[in-house]
Length: 630
Image (cartoon, rainbow, N blue to C red; front, side, top):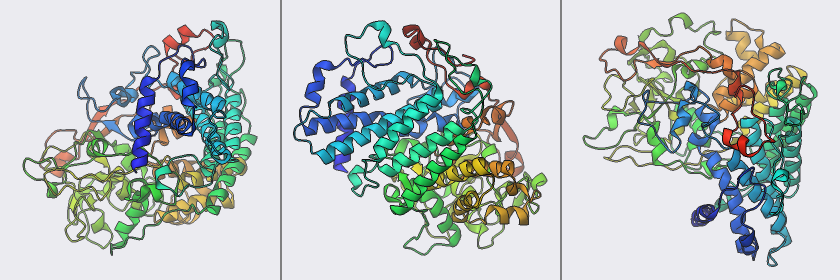
């Protein structure tokens, strides 16, 4: 791990020396130092890590718009102050603060700086005489992968963007340095080309812990699959509103009509990535704890460990292990105050600066594996009624036995209890693993750790983080960028869109569901749903797969992007209140607590499917055109 720390130190030093460049940073401004940067193998390696450094910020959850604008998490503040973390405005995105003059999380020019660094590396990697051919091939593959990744990030956030295949000479005339946006299909094709080249030379997996997070051929194939699924999705494939966008030369930037064949291409890419993952020892993770724990707890470990487990870097499910650590700040922000651990005068509970809207609690399935509004056996109309939690051998490890909570919190699937903390919810760990003394959240008696909605993202806090002393003892973890379950669901989605319900579409959704303790979709819907034929149609299975992704990948930075590419983002939020229980009002009875509190009403319109390009960027480069609506 010392090597990893040295890598990050190098990144900080190199980045601090980088200067800004107008336009798209396609003309290098550090020519005088490039020869020195590639003087020998070690210097070239340092430059390689500089290319990676731009990826690090993308992996930070709170800096990922797919996480912060997804509606899965909101900040606890309603006024003008008390913002948190380094980019506070991102938490206000859903509240309609986005402008073209000052875009929230404006990453356009920064990603082109990253691409320029990648181009510089590719143009100079032949210079070190002490670099072996094997190393050079691998490093080239890594930078091709990174370049493709940065273009993919640009596509998701901004749509069609300029393609800069190589840096321009420093004496390039100003007008020639201005490049128009390329059609989205052209950018996707370039991303695929880069990833194919990268996959051909990269190792399939990495065994050295110090190198976790560096590119592999499996990562390249998985990213290719995700890119092609994105290209085939409604937002990029014949959306009539986006088809109105034309470049400065009049070229149409989005396809005007949908091409169904894109789904077939995406399905083939997903299957190739799945097969390669299986052939190289990547498989869905099932927890096998060394100590004896109840099955209900073990089930939660299977769900949580790939993200927050003590060995998350080495979990065989993680196709793309993250190398950005989550330590004290973020963990504290999404942790509640657990009454059993409070020490007078101590800081042993979370700061609860972030909250989960009540709508996310309704998203998860019942314990029968179907939506709560479809389950024939679920008392949906009375889900907000207060009742005492039963003490059976499953429920008592999910909700504190005898505790007065609402029916919404009972008889839910294991992922509900693995992902969410709530009033009466049991929290295994936090210093207590004796199953006869498990802690639970009591919203009626918070010391100072309540939050805006009454729900916390428990999935993002390791059970090994402890609060039995006057200070929290944090367990560091590294959230993965991509897991096998993500790829399985991408394949199921593409297979269904290409060919309707197929055996493969069912099989790969069912694999994810079985790990979560549920039956397959056909069995679950036929036995428990008031819409038993739903999985048998393409549209029905589409709805199931979309909800499955929102549940399985909840709080992992993907859902905001999924909702956009499906064209479900605006309908989900438009006119809908973001709400929770009671806000910060101190109450003494469940009846007082379980009163809806509206935090805010999101402000969304069709223009929010893409970010605006900063007005200053457009002024500097008159070849660029603004996204529709901005």
